[in-house]
Image (tube, rainbow, N blue to C red; front, side, top):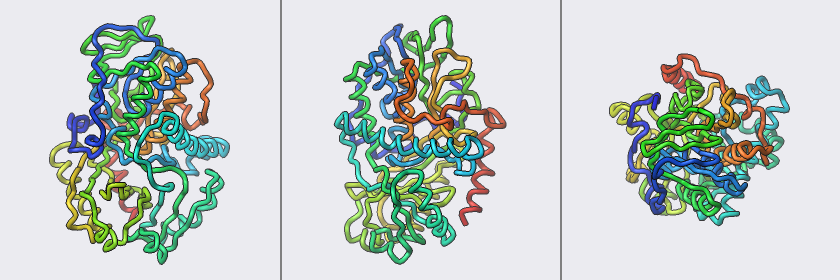
Length: 439
């Protein structure tokens, strides 16, 4: 495999809280050479959603996961099932896809949340869901003014009425912290991503999909049929869905080279916080929340009173860089929630999210590669959008029109980043500019 980061970025990085909340998945390794109608590479939300919908559509489907079930971003994210999936602003969306394309993308954000909710309901997945939508917290007076001026647009785009909370009303809603106002969008919910992942896997297996773990694909080529080489033998397939997102390899296939940019994200989870300490800080809300910085923080009080707090990760995965980001995330946490300075951090880990050069995700056929489809690039909001992308890819692989929205913002093949294999160098100046804008 040809990957951008140091090996630790793709290995276990700290103890993920979610891992201990579900029994280990029992997906056997591929036992030897096989043939399947559709092969899915990647066992996260996108891959499992695709496998489930393919199997329900009557296809023979085999999914290959390189590591254990839930190993990648789908098993270690913050558990925010909410609007998102792109980093493009309204102005950028309008410039690239026109006003109709911008509107279609916003409708797809709403549909993606509904896709995840439908899967949970239809398959009886117990995912510890909570939170009435998401709350955006203004980190500055200017950001508060922007939230107020943008509320009408949210209602027009998503069909829900956001609730604005002025600074003096935050305490009454249990949103105590260094914030200057809030906007709550009543769409989406928080969940335990590992439980959601395990539920999707069970549903896919029940529908007839075959799931294999510890089966990395080391080469992908087409010779009449698609050939997927693994350490235990070759899987041949009529069609292939690539669902590896930030854990992709530059040569699987070569077309993917430089069309995605993995970025590290870091998370801590505290020990349970007592009611007294919650009151002392003024944060008693169970809303999933994030601030309005470009380099945002995302956080929520979970059902067992632990607090999850996440932010961007380091530029490299070296021990020195990881130590620095570990220090930084604790500093940011205590700066925002000083009354919890003495609360112990029980778990800390990192994972990879995936950016695209045009700042929107891709889900569709890979150009000039008959029978190959790909879905990736959710910009840190893959719970809903990855689930939705999986349904699109399944329908396309079945030769059907997608059952849900499939806007031009997702259909257009991604362009390559500048600098090729050295494109990580783009992150340092981008972070510096974003940090300056956050002041």
